[in-house]
Image 1 (cartoon, helix red, strand yellow):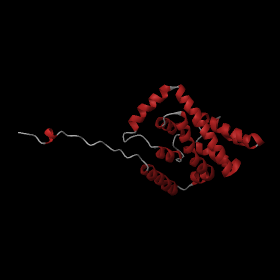
Image 2: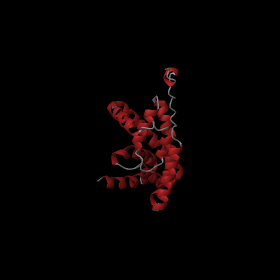
Image 3: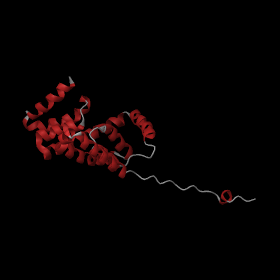
Image 4: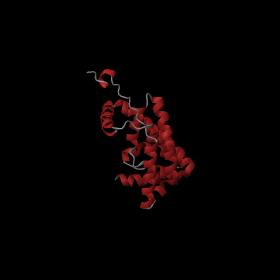
Length: 193
């Protein structure tokens, strides 16, 4: 059912004429309901509109998806509290930095909304969240739109090399944890007899 719908939507958008960009942006908004990866939708944009316009429309669609996600997350705060618990368990070395989140956005199998939760956790208000969400979808939109098919069709060796490269970049931009030095009292350090 969902597969047939996912195949039919791009054909319908292609035949819709002048309203095709609006339908494509809406396709981005219903993408989570169809369980489609961001990579697929961006590749459809590259096929239908070319790299430049497909990237622009994908940036608009993904940014709107982030904005909708922000309001849904604010409406259901129990989701955020569960995320905070999960985040504490998973991030023992400290929270992800914005640079790490942006690198993870470029990984095709990284969960888009989980990364949006990380952005939400790292920001203080709607304006800051929208800014970082917008900045975070620019590069993946361009890459997935122009090179999405190449990433999917890469031989296994090149896929492993690309994954290794993204892992090195991911850990290269992590936040360095600086611990406060322990303060030892003079009397305890030099025991008096």
